Length: 82
Image 1 (spheres, rainbow, N blue to C red):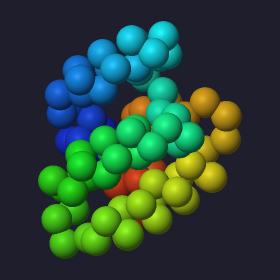
Image 2 (image 1 turned 90 degrees about the horizontal axis):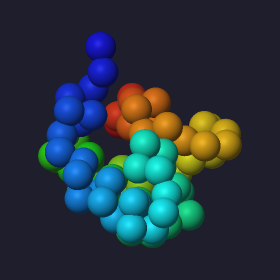
Image 3 (image 1 turned 120 degrees about the horizontal axis):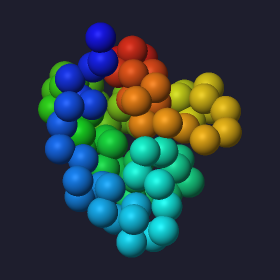
Image 4 (image 1 turned 30 degrees about the vertical axis):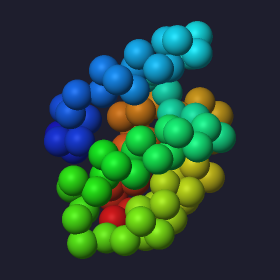
């Protein structure tokens, strides 16, 4: 079963990706605004984790998932690391 974070409203994220002519279904680890967006989303589900711990999980998944990073598997990876 998918993590509840994936049921969150991602429309503002998707719209920004569309404006940049990119697919909102994929995460770009090179975009600092995307990493910050994901950090804010994750805080809701991992309130006891520090920003550094969350960023470490994000970084780990950026390295672990090669090539395009589909949002679902990427977020599952991040949440599993926490």
